[in-house]
View (spheres, rainbow, N blue to C red):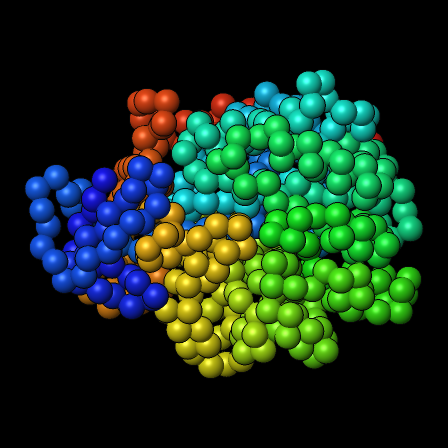
Length: 448
């Protein structure tokens, strides 16, 4: 398949009249610049690389528009999240994830990292056959056509020195050794199209010696993610228990390296920022979620300036729109600093695309050897008309996405999914049925 793009954002800069050739494996085989279209080309207008959603909890989508009446903070919201987690079973998870992944794909996300910890039955016993919940996520991704990096998450304690209770029991594997055994079996069981990555839930949920065991037990090329310092309470608890910040704890356990992605990184000391930048980690900011939950504004610019890569994620999926995520990152920086242009449009585009893909263990961007994942944007809408193509990331929204290409195949068109199994369907149709089992989000689980 060959695509001719009137204008293409390559490295964040607009390039005119570009032909992109996809090989049979769905990778970019050749790029021709300043060349006219030829017969048989798929004609596209303004094109950017596919966006990589570097942090998602698919099932959190069940809470959208249902948690704003009680006020409170992250910890109060978490009670409602646990209630949703308690209701998940493989069949309901497949239907919900299919709708969420479909919404992402139509919005311009061509790949997603799902930070997955609902592993077992509600009583904590394994599913038979094994990996039922993980297979549900993989099947949902295959059904929609989005690329999936499944971040199988180690979650051992309910808090520092606190056992798992209530719904948390289904998250746990007792020890890092038991989790590693299940992780290796999972990687062998899933289709190779799924990148099986790994995650440490947080320093609250994995003790330091178990963090070290996970780091040592994983192959060195496996992407590793962790929630880090999203809440100031996490920092206080970590200091009280271990005498160090969460970042220092990860460093002492050998976790800081370029393969690590830390999520949120909202409440950091200057030493933390220096350690993360020096280790060249990826920092996954989730600005719409951090705003929704009142988490705070993280030091994204300072982290980038010290050597960290910035990527973006939709996290709880209260908002599924890569453009709004990028805009919220820059808006937070402007509000915190009183200055505009903290991140250039090119940097924001790179955060959405190449850095996001790297965090997923994939190769993104428009370059030879990268996945042929492209997003066509309407440059003539009420939002984008007149905009400099280089700055469209700060003008467009998901509504402006016209066609989404994954692996050299058109997978979405004008908000409608072109499903690999055949036919077309709108994400809203999929989500309407998927959300029915969650119609009473106030019900709380047994335990926290």
